[in-house]
Amino acid sequence: MAAAQEWKVGELAIATGLTVRALHHYDEVGLLVPSERTHAGHRLYSQDDVRRLCRIVALRRLSLPLEEVANLLDDESLSLADTVRGHLKRVERDLGRQARLRQRLVSILAALDQSLEPSINEFIDALEVMAMTEASVEDVLVPVFHEAVTAEPGCVPPDGQPVMLLKERKGERILPIWIGHPEGAALALQLAGTALPRPMPQDLMARLVEAAGARIERVCVSRFGENTFFAAVTVNAQGESQEVDARPSDALNLAVRVGAPIFVDSQVMDEWAVPSREAVASRLTECGGPHRADAKREAPSEWRSLTVGATAPPPPEIVWRRA
Image 1 (cartoon, rainbow, N blue to C red):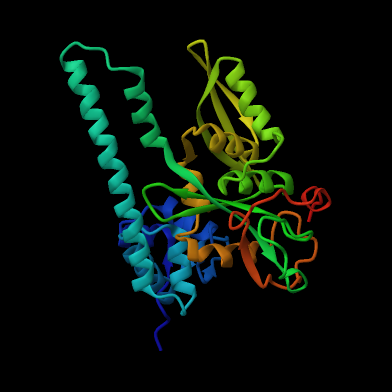
Image 2 (image 1 turned 180 degrees about the horizontal axis):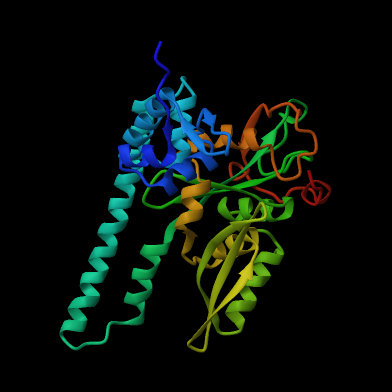
């Protein structure tokens, strides 16, 4: 019986039109690991490896991310149709973003062709379309476990870590961000339109900015790193803008109080958002929360909105406890 054919990495690259570097990368990320190695340690690809590579190339021609390609190849429960459908939605969303960017660039170019200086706002708008996704604060949720299912709306259960939901304005994606109890309660009460007899710290912060003659131009969730979301607040004072580092919970509390536009870095949204509101609960239950000590803890019986029926501030002993 003839020995099964095997390909060295260079031979396979020539046969498929791929680069050796691409094949090395597929190996490094676990997408296509060669079945054999020579005595010198060089890669040897079997016929099954080549068949898998053909499927990889076909899926990559759909511009699917490598992670989704790997999932499709290794998880038989995943539907190619559903994956392509989801990818089509992303492409359509990006087409909308590119159309808005084109419109703004055409406006800038028309001004330049007439020897007119485009306004700084036109440049800023174009930059925001390229790098940012406009969003709004949709809700604040808390997990409710069996022992706390009777908790009043607007109150943070003692073992429930709040999560604020940012929704892209021209789409359905939701970015969930875990926040602290006091910040979650303050944000929920503001979203519910609840007026308190005395100002909360976030109200004071907004009034101080106003009293100083400044204004909040925008708030941006700018990046994710070290298991933490980062934000920035752009403040304009006396005609000059300055960016101030902030926690997302503080920045968004301020934004909803002064009506400032909210943006999320497009890469952050692409990497960490879920496709829709319906997918939020499963994502939150899966990750468990930033302070969850017991990974085997039972799943919550529900994720409850804090903005529904929020008519009074939560009791201090509940607001200030950490999960």
